[in-house]
Length: 464
Image (cartoon, rainbow, N blue to C red; front, side):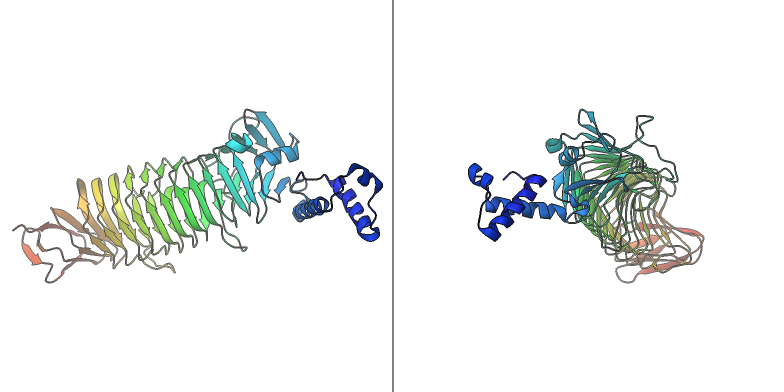
């Protein structure tokens, strides 16, 4: 049925009431034979549904808030047709649009932005306007960036995130996806406007969101979340982001970060921090980042880093970093051309997040690194069955009263260094080992233990 106009609805309502009260059908309607009770009632109900949305319309513009409100399921083309004001939304031609307002998707509403249905190729958002989603959004095969009309280019950002610019705010969103798209030059240091931001809210967490096969670059943060769950980030490129490429935070859970290329970011590449759990980082290629490559931080627990390829991470930009986190597994990763491969550490003065303990680091490969594995003020972590290629300094290094439990390991001139404090080394279930070419010890019978402080030992597996 074609939706009736508002005037027709009002007239139909009056006629319907007249008929119900008197039993008499208006003369003009009798003659034209188009007064249909069912059609009129359906149209009235449709109009009532639209009236439920904020502003009283399916798509409405609030000039006081400079916001286009989407209050019913729709697409970007519906917005173009409803607004029809180039001061708010300008058609630049060739599928490019300039948005001079916020675009807000209401609760329980699904909004689509894609090149196939909407002929939308590139959305340029001016000022500190953004896309704000409380319902569900589906973004496919388009480009979204900030835009400076004076320079006719995206808005650049400072190292401190001080420049207000466009953003995608998915706080309390009900799901959706970004796929085969590009989101760039977005965000600044103002929650929840940091980039693609599934940030904090007292109204509940975001959930069921995916980013796939897209390019996310030159944002303040490529991705941020807090408390979000059922999140998938797969098959993307994250590069040139300033603060973090990806920062799932504060209770984010049931999340998979997989098969992404994460490179040339100006801070940490991927970090999950503050009580994250059931998180998996797998199959990613990570390199040339100024901060750590893959990191669990501040009580991230019961999570996995596996089967990633990580290289060209130098100085304190550790390929894999475990800080104040517990009960995680790190395995099957290939680390090369870096200063220190895997660091398991704590601050020297512990806080409420606790120590890095009960982590299991196994079946990783190290080649072209200065130090393969490092423990700082951490204990009760297990290192087993790791494979070493070219390690120039130390295979294992401990400091600040750390401990290392090494199991099921084949040693080939492995250098183990204890720096500051009384660092405890334990080797077990690794067959017979020879320490400094003198001590011959069967670790299958009894663990070999030694306190290392300011000294290095060399360990070899005994040959028959």
